[in-house]
Image 1 (cartoon, helix red, strand yellow):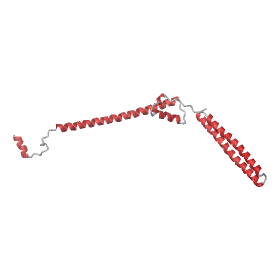
Image 2 (cartoon, helix red, strand yellow):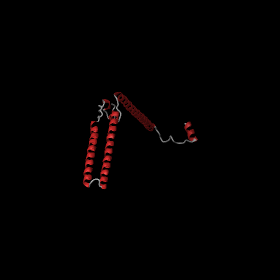
Image 3 (tube, one colour):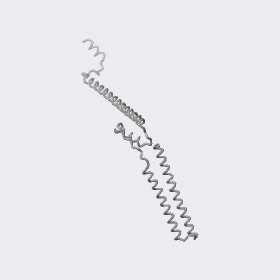
Image 4 (tube, one colour):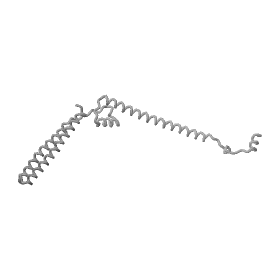
Length: 181
């Protein structure tokens, strides 16, 4: 029998017993009301009514207890789902959470489905690693470019032999004098 069907069957049985308990309660209440009416109308004495109520309540209690025991026995004897051994693949941080999720779901996974899930987890892990490595490589490239730019700036700053005259504006006369010399 499929595990889901078994659980459903147990739930149906539990509901039936629970309904029987409710019917038993209602029946006991009806009988007690009838006894009270008989006492009020004088058909039964107070002592007879008291003893009869006590008897009805004891019988109802006994039946209710038996139904309750039956429910408890069902809970005790219900099939405990077999605990699958954790495959070696899932014995790692992060992966064990996936395995726990799968085992706590209401689906019974066969080995083929577990294999597919294992493959999917590996693909997700690999793509996450690849994305991380690409991000790191991009950061490394940016850092290298920044360092290169800094070095060029430093080199240009050190190689400039400025005597302070490079930014001067020359007049026509000054240019003419420098050409004649």
